[in-house]
Image (tube, rainbow, N blue to C red; front, side, top):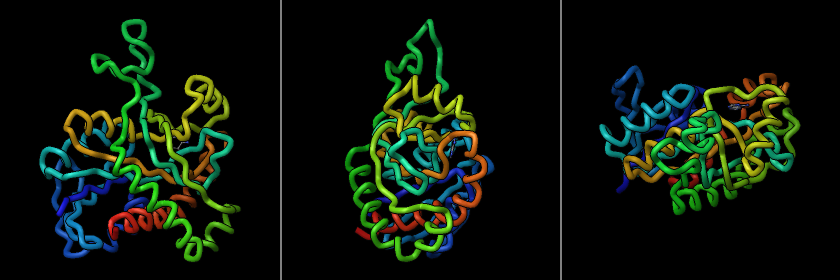
Length: 248
Ligand code: ADE
């Protein structure tokens, strides 16, 4: 069978999957703990990348090169950038862009120099499968997470697919949110790792996908919503979606 890498930036985002890992063996590389084992009938490697583009890129390269995984799925939280995207909704990235990349006037704004691109596509089949799993899991998980959803005022979570933007900044002011929305009107969500993973995975020919639960609206109250949401909703929901996908 295929060997999958399951990656998250934060401990809370990985905890539920780690607890379900069978026959775990832990190895350390570059200051990270790589947990090999079996999950829902598949050989997997679970690892916490740490926060930001460099941490994510380092981790992705180790998974591609040292572990030779067949596909990589990055899960975690993101800030919502569209009015139609609410806290608790799930986003499956179809394209990723580094919103803080700017080598202008030498290269167009957001273009990764010498690659000729600013938008990096995710693997279509893997993203299809995760989006389907997300829709199915949200139906089923509503029962399990209903009280958490209700406590946080979350009504009916939905699944969105499209552009996710990444940068080495936690976006936590309305001013910055507006600037991002003006520059990149189709961006669904902002986070700090996905586009870096995309760049490495395309270099390494490694199929990958990025699955995010919206934890905040990347505005002045972003920090308030964030902590509680990650532990109570995003971790368990992300794990439920990934496991729904693995069981297929
Ligand atoms: N991850 C979750 N929320 C975020 C935000 N507002 N900015 C950057 N990364 C995030």
